[in-house]
Length: 343
Ligand SMILES: NC(=O)c1ccc[n+]([C@@H]2O[C@H](COP(=O)([O-])OP(=O)(O)OC[C@H]3O[C@@H](n4cnc5c(N)ncnc54)[C@H](OP(=O)(O)O)[C@@H]3O)[C@@H](O)[C@H]2O)c1
Image (cartoon, rainbow, N blue to C red; front, side, top):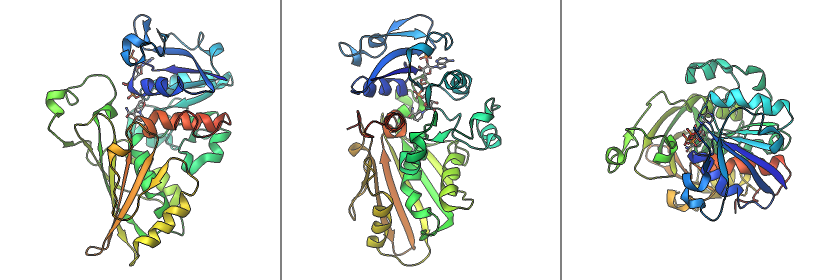
């Protein structure tokens, strides 16, 4: 049994972590903290936990009290805050799984350009492991610091990885266009006008067009896979559902290829991956089929008329896109079966 703490327990990522970890047979949750002014019962914050998780969530007042209570700490915090807290846990030999963007980008200059904040812990970036098990399983097993991927990047990198991998790519790498739609929980639990029900209900909108901060993360990982620099065009959209991301990538084919040949590429790449569901021909991912699960569904179709390949993926932004993936990483780091608590 390992002891887990969550900082940022009152947010959406925190709630999903509590839900998953409270049913995990190898984990005891020993510490819940958030910004807060005063201690509060977690079942008062999330009545869903009434009679199931009877714990107090405390105001975060430094790492001192938490350090002796945990083997692993989940940081479900806004970017900037995570990088201030992670080093103290690492220095005391604790495993850290950060859900924010603070350790995802290997180049601190890129982080600073997109997140408009100085990176104070540059020396930690080299050893931080990007927590996408389908790409980095072996490195995750021995990592101390996991940079848990963003929700859009998870859906997009998983959809495209088999196609851009060095030497295998049947598509033009300089012509990748992706649009994604996310549910409102992607924006976190703090109220905002855009996420206000009368504003978003029966509406849909593109936002941060040609400037979303997940763009460099997607480009970093696709470039690593391809062995050369890749730039993408990425447009995120907000749609009036609570959870779920549907991403569609538009790719130009280098030459004619059959659906079955692409199927072989995908099957090869994702053989033995427990949370990837490749769909049969003419069957496409749906948010409803993955919400509440740690699965990523992927489907594709060739448009013969335009020589384009369309790849579609769906995940739950809070599970495979955040807390479920974080627990998948924890399972690997502590030598548990990768699917424990996530089935
Ligand atoms: N939502 C998603 O779909 C999603 C997906 C992937 C990754 N992420 C990332 O995961 C992280 C958490 O996202 P979220 O959606 O859970 O956000 P959220 O709902 O806004 O929750 C943020 C949490 O952080 C706490 N917090 C904020 N500042 C703090 C501080 N200085 N000290 C201690 N606690 C502090 C908040 O406490 P109070 O409630 O007391 O203010 C709250 O518990 C973010 O970095 C986000 O980008 C989110």
